Length: 222
Ligand SMILES: Nc1ncnc2c1ncn2[C@@H]1O[C@H](COP(=O)(O)OP(=O)(O)OP(=O)(O)O)[C@@H](O)[C@H]1O
Ligand SMILES: Nc1nc2c(ncn2[C@@H]2O[C@H](COP(=O)(O)O)[C@@H](O)[C@H]2O)c(=O)[nH]1
Image (cartoon, rainbow, N blue to C red; front, side, top):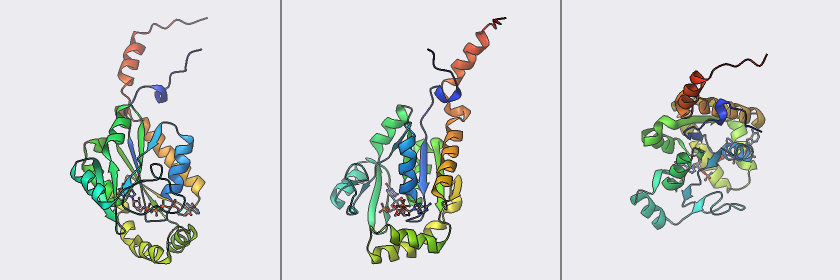
């Protein structure tokens, strides 16, 4: 049996899909849901000096490192971008991203606005698709941050205090979604991803396909 040909099955370049938001708006939740249903996208696992939260697994949620190791990675050019966020260092390891893109896979980033600004300056800027998530209200954001029950009251308060500053970067992004109903928001992210994958310039296999199509002699079966 032959695989039906469609634009989705042609060889294409991988893209970088960035999700940013104020802390607690839902990036991790939506990232996990997207990763669970889409085998063509890989999560970029960041390095951080933040201590692990209960339930977080080293290598899956983050690579947890000490400040000396982070510094060595940053100075050695091992990070595609990095930033100080809420008092801790966070960065994107370069090698896994490059390997995934080379293999035609897409890469999902859960990073802040500072990191997104740096990716816009990087070589891969033409392959970047950025989404900013807004909470439906500040009250709901506070409820989600507190309800997650992974951080102390002080940490929740300090993240809420930074939220409006984070939100002020919304207009720098290609797409802005309000994460009210998570299922609706996930469907919107999927639609953005599908449209980005189908862009003509991303589809390296299209030129050969059209060339073959033009050579094809129609042979009606009737
Ligand atoms: N649409 C939604 N409706 C209700 N609750 C939600 C929704 N999206 C996420 N949540 C809940 O809000 C809390 C925070 O979500 P999540 O951890 O995904 O946020 P985040 O943006 O990744 O935060 P951070 O930047 O701190 O990592 C979680 O308890 C999650 O279950
Ligand atoms: N610039 C970067 N920001 C990152 C990276 N990894 C995560 N983050 C952002 O940090 C905050 C806090 O995350 P938390 O897990 O402590 O709640 C959040 O906005 C993340 O998006 C990174 O590699 N670079």
